[in-house]
Length: 256
Ligand code: ZN
Image 1 (cartoon, protein in one colour):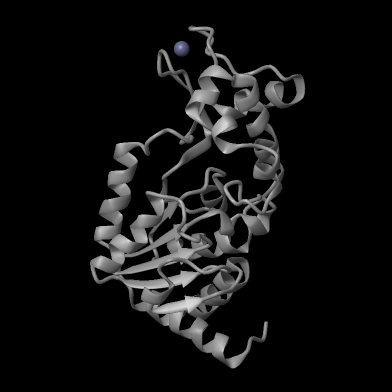
Image 2 (cartoon, rainbow, N blue to C red):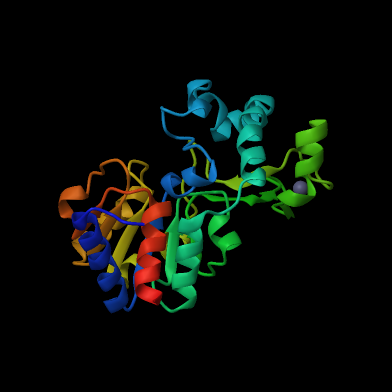
């Protein structure tokens, strides 16, 4: 692909920064899965939130008190994720990891696409739809074992022992991030010499504060996002591009 000279130079700069980093960290958000057809479910401009009040359907109180509303909200998201695949951005990051660049991915996404693309070192801040757990006995179950009867027969996932509804292992509104996962993310950020934000507008807190933590540590910052972010002025390189276009270009430059 041919880009304007200004963009070519920015892509070269990003490639050089990644090549010279020893402990680069990537921070990904909904924008990296939009090219796979997964809507940004926290964004007001996409269908999923236009139909629902997030607190009414995607909160822990909705799961506990109005499970039909909760699972009704989650259903279209889960079926979209099941039908979708990782895109060129996920694949490029996995290639870079296996070549020894940008080891740790910190993601806000719950779709599991980084692992599906082949990335190994992934910190999922908001959990993952791959798993369910019982809020009473804390047994864990694979979503894959329940998803068909849920989506086709509308049988909600239930703990075989406790006979109560299983909770998808994702962080809902009114819930805190799991402390062990958060600590892992902080440690990765504190050891990072480069932070690459890919497809996040850094609006969702506390996740979005991690790149700022890196800036405070003096870590170099690259922001690759279609819309502006609160840290744009602090970025060493700003690349307002679709990540599924930019990351393969950068990957090619590094691995060529
Ligand atoms: Zn149970």
